[in-house]
Length: 147
Image 1 (cartoon, rainbow, N blue to C red):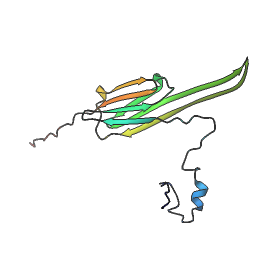
Image 2 (image 1 turned 120 degrees about the horizontal axis):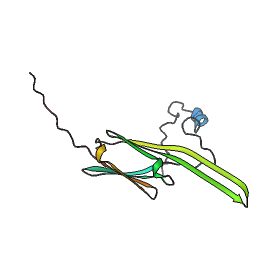
Image 3 (image 1 turned 60 degrees about the vertical axis):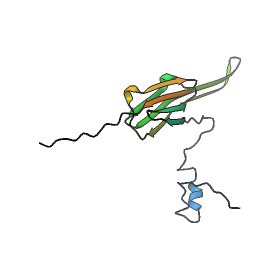
């Protein structure tokens, strides 16, 4: 039976056949550093398309709707959110541990058709952002008469 290996597009093994450089640099330059105790927040999404519109469901739990920003530029859509988490453990009046985290998370994607910004809608409920992005009507080419 053949062994399966995961393809890493950033692997330097293609350059260095011995793999020494890849082992040395793995996780240092390619992947961001992860600090213990900080939450790993990502925007996970589902994207659906029909003849008239795109529908996006993005999971952004624990964020206020005022801290979510959506921008549309033609067929480019960007979602960003400010995250603030505070956790404090007390025993009586004595604070044993206090952890605070704040940061920004963002996700951008490109669609095949331009979006009609004037008809786009956004709803946020139970940690899920729902975007309805109607497709812009295809403009027919206009032929100019030469005078």
